[in-house]
Image (cartoon, rainbow, N blue to C red):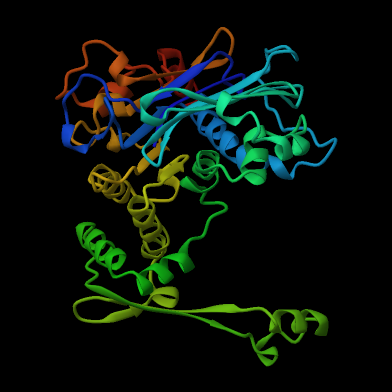
Length: 415
């Protein structure tokens, strides 16, 4: 689970902003919290904000950190690290990224900064038995290992470059369990859903076929959504494409290539009370989207991973998002699953779904065009029973553009 994430000088984010999933003193939905040592940790969080206020940029900063840890070991000499600083920052201002997280019941603290497309500094600590242990600190190309690791990083230092994170290097050139755990947290445990890139349908069918537990939860969710679906019958098998089935216009070389590749043959029947349909040929886009999304999300919850999604309503109806949030809220007590997403959908601003410290807002500072991030728990005089959607739309909490009379008058002048 992510305990805290901070960043600065990333796109519209100029000064340091901090997201925290450490629960406040509020005792609402206490049974949905995950307890770790002396901390009560939130299993989900939602981010609201006007278009252009920076909520997508905050999500992208977290995704950037994940991707750089996972992939910077592949960077070649002369290949600078991508950097997207704030437009009003100087060239010498570093972009900073810091995170505290839990992996295998141990807390970690990791961070780095980038300036002029190269790593400026970096650190990694972990807290076995609750006590801080330094794994390494880095200043440009100089690395200072912790006392326990003085002779552990020789091969890793040989792979280090100014465009590579040292965590990426030591994860690939050592066998240290604590380092591998930290690397896997970024590379595998944080799952980013982008509807323009991801298509999880085949993975979903495979899960339905192989995992009865996932199938049962999936059917329960479909019924809770009122789809009328009673059951599903699926089959996924690998087949070799036949050259005779390929378009005649395909070059022979291309036909030969595809003939050597495994293809997936999917059969999926959706069973209603009085009839059944073919998922691919007969079902609506909405039902297909449920098949694509719900099973992987159940898998993410069961395996204790973190799902990150920007503008989740572009992929799913509000009632589906509601059920997804409930999946994370009601995950097993031994599972560290977490959901962080942004949305414009005010129907989800519901005190029956979220605590006040789970709701976050981004707002653009008009003076320096910089993003600020704050939670509803930081705003005074917000009652537990308050209509949060109405309060947000009215501008009570900030985070939305305030439309004045001249805005509406301009439409009247057009008549």
